[in-house]
Each structure stands twice: as structure tokens, then as C-alpha cells.
Image (cartoon, rainbow, N blue to C red):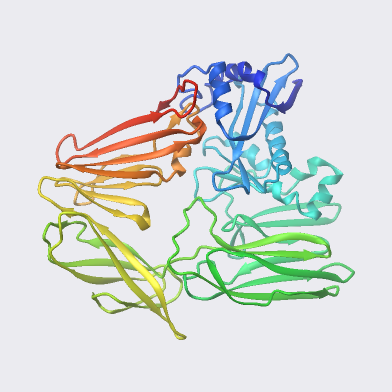
Length: 549
């Protein structure tokens, strides 16, 4: 059945039609779309006015009814990408290609606005939508629930792909596809990548995305192949590794090329062979860059790109930027501390379970009073170190153990392993803060607790390690999904009063126009052991209707 629908951009006069669409869209959303809260025309106007959308696309029938809505905001990690904050098609109009048209227009709009990527979230059970998203270039990032990235806006900036699409805009979506509703765990050798590949009239174009860097790492076309890679995808901070740039001339004429460094995030360049030159047909040029990541930098979060090396390359007037990502690691990480908390006035030792996170055998030497002084760890292997403590006060203790790594060439300094352990007090709750890992640890006579600032999650367990309770990330809306609080790192404030400890967590809710959510968690030594309170502060001028679930 054909349907006269046009895709256009939002106008303020559309608020009534959008409110009607939202109120009629309960079906097909986990837990409903509005959460039982009626959406009004004023709510839509205020919500859109306060939201930082870069584009709002609507699907409108010939009779003027709004039956589809797509909003895009700038990606929370920066100006390189945008994000589909919400895509909704009226339940009675689904299955008619409206969602496809909205998403195609979103890809083109992202390109027109200068973004390199457009992302979205969905859920694993939404298999019909998953196939649609994959058909349009969205890749399911492995290990996520379900985060999808679409690199077509950035690839459109490459001359070989721009020339292909100039024949017909629909050719942009004519790449090789795997529409199975599973993670896109693609590999190029051992390298984790996403691959976009077009074949038309005997011409093949292949664009490879480095999944660690979230950027282009390889391009193959009829004229040339160019690739940037690293010899270690998990280098140890402070120790050198190598990046390699390769350019091959596949054309029948000479190719001029030039390469220069753009950025080496948190890294030092030891040496570089980047240069310019000319390649005859069939020739290949290789350039090596030696670098090392600085010691003392923090791990990147799972939903952020890894650190990377970025190189700008120009080949016969065609310009592109390549990146090679690497998941750098500290040499060792603390896996456990025994005991998990100390009594006040404790004098004795703490045993630290340590693990080598690298693929190399490491020799670790501690600068503090630790036994053994030198610890040799096999690749990915574990070991135990013991530290003497004396007369601890009635507060949490943070232990920082400086160490250096002994290599064949020299000793590399600037490392430390950190542990935060509460100190028990009779009939009271005590705490310790691990700033390095964004966690607050609490101890009470009957339980242990952990507050993770990322997402505001709370874990409670017995002293024997049995789980008592888990308070996951809260949801606030409408709309309740996707849940932006999952990726927020909450600010915190700790108040100790009498025998209790209060942890106040605050975060700004972007989709509510910058309203501030405060989550207050009170930990007590006796029943009720944990109490949670919520406060929502409206920073706008209009009334705000929202619920916390």
C-alpha cells in the first residue's frame, strides 16, 4: 500500500502533531513510550526548546498528520558525531518504509552538518529494527547493549565514495551487508574493525573502520590502498611500540603522496619516518612511527574510543585521515585486597592480588615497604604482594604503591597501584574513596557496599561475598529510553553524621533540558540499612513533567 508521506524538518507549529504522535505510540516500546504521562503541546515546545538537538526530522502525510519523528543531538563525547536521540513511527503506520526514509535522511543530514558518524541505541529483542539499521549502515558494537555506529557520513567525505554516490544517492546504501541481528564482530586479521564494501561495474571500494579508534584505518580503491596499523593493540604505558603506514599504487600512473602526524593522544613520538614521495605503478611505501603512551594516564571507559595515533595522508590531491587505536594498559592492576576492611587501630599486613595486564613478561620492583620487593609476572599472570600497616584511624585508608618496570634497556618509572579500604568502627558505617576507579567503598557491621559513580549504581553484599542487593541505573523520562544516565559519571558529596554515611550523587539530565537529578543514598549500620531519596531540580522556565523509574 503506497502512502503519500514527505520527510521534512521541524517547525514550532508542529508541537500539537508531535504530542498526538507520542501519546498514540505506547505500543511497541518496552514499558510504553510515555510512562503513563500525557504529553502536551506545551511540553513538546519546552522540551525541544531546551534540548540541544542539531536536527529534528518529521514524516508527514498528505493530510498533514505527523506519523514519524527523528531527533538528533550532538554526541556526548564531542563534535565528531551526532546521535539519534529518538526515532518513533506511529504504530498504525509502521512497516511502510517511513523509518527507513527518516534514517536515510538522518545519515545525509549528519553529512551535511559536517559529522563523521551518526549513532543510536536499541535493544536486542528489536530484531526488525536491527535489520533495518544494519541495512542502512549501522554497526552493532560488540559487547554493548545495543549501541550502533554508522560511519557513512564521514565516508561520504572520501573522494572515491563521493564519486560513487554522485551517480545515484541510493548507491551509498548499496554496500555488502550482513543483516543478522547479532553483534558486528568483524576482523581484519586480528584487528577489530567494521568493513564497508561496495562493488559496482567491476570496481571495488573498501573502507575499514578501526573499532578501537572509531575512525578510518584503511581504504582500498582502484587507484591505491592505504592503511595505518600498530604492532601492539594493548601496549604497556611507558614502553615503546610501533605504528606502520603503508601506501600501494594500484594505478597505471605515478602517484604523489605526503603524510604527516595529526595527533598522538597522551603519547610521545620517539621516532618517525613519515615523509612525502612518488610511487610508480605497483610500488609500495612503508613508514614506521615509534611511540609510547605516557605513564599515569587513566583507562578509557568502555563506551569511549581508545587512544589512537592519527595521520593525515594526501595521495595525488585526495586527502584523508587515518587512525590506529590501541587499548593501552598499566603494567599491573589490583584485583583484590585482603582483608577487605580494617578494624580501627589495626596493625598488620594487607595482601594485594595483582595481575599483569600485558602480553609481556614483566619484572616489577616496588618503591614502598612491600614483600617481595621484586615481582615477576608472566603474561596475563597473577601474583601477591604484602604491605605492612600500623595503627589505622577510624576512617578509610587509600594505599598507593609506587613501582617501576625493569626492562632489558632501562627501568621505567611513573607507575602506582592504588587500593581503597574502609576502616571499621563499632556500630558505624565507614567509607573510602578510590578516585582512580571512580568508586566509593563502604563498610558496616553487617554488610559491604560499593557506589560506582559511572551510572550511579549501588552494590551491597555480605562480608562473605553473597549479594544482598543491587540498585541499577535509574531511568528518567518520558521518554525513558534510551537511558542517558547509564553513561553519566555522577558528581559526589559525602556527609558523615553520627553512625551513618550519606552519599549524594548529582547529574545533569540533558533530555530534560539540563534539569539536575540528585540521588541521595543513606547508609546506616542497622535497619533500614540503605535509604534512597531523589530530587529533581528544574532549571528551565516552564513546568517540567517527569518520572523516575
